[in-house]
Length: 239
Image (cartoon, rainbow, N blue to C red; front, side, top):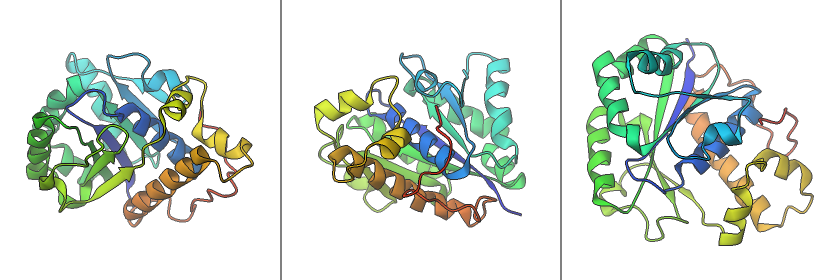
């Protein structure tokens, strides 16, 4: 049977561009599949729910009820791709919970395919937590995100042998532009006719990278027949 994909965007470090990556991944999945669910586990504002309120739900790990509200949708084979924007404050608690409930085994049993997208930081804690995930997560399900705007020197050497996706750095004025609450990556591609603009190229490059990543999950995914037509952009706006 084919699987439902889940993308967990996480980092133990603040200010590494995690929510930006969750935003663009959420919009890409909505564009590709025509449906998506994003779960926002953050304390900071603005957060993912502020950017994509129509496809995002908030969650927390404060008590047993909150934990179950977060975990229950993640083990359902409902053919809806999911993105979790996990705040750095919840990093340890979430993976502790995953161990307690046997999340990896449970998702495999229920035909759900989780992908852990670890956003690398410059602090020593980033390497420590990455090594922890290495011991717990199957190699095919763990990907390092190198956000070049935040981490100019690249991930530490210990991560170089593993799978790394690089998000190219944009100039500061374009970063401020895409940080606006009303900004949509997909709508920009639809409305900006000049494909040579730096932002247009950046979005297309990032969407193409996520398309390739999603294809590795689509081997077991029910969305294989839909494909991704980034050029035509025929689907409905995500936000």
